[in-house]
Length: 61
Image 1 (cartoon, helix red, strand yellow):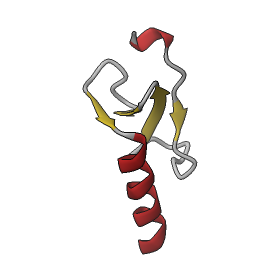
Image 2: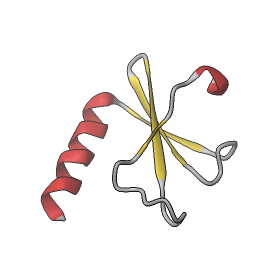
Image 3: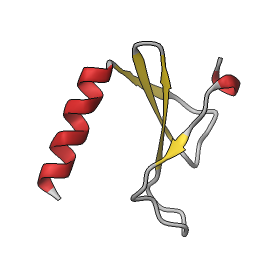
Image 4: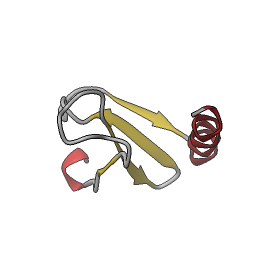
């Protein structure tokens, strides 16, 4: 499954490494992974939970 996914890197990720996340969307699920560990664990969120997180993160920066 993971090889068929299209992953998008955070627009806030820099080019010099560091703390970067990537996100992929599947039916009714948003997956999040560490961009430096592509074969590592992935977190799964409902689209509503992910949207709430993103809205919160935007409000506190």
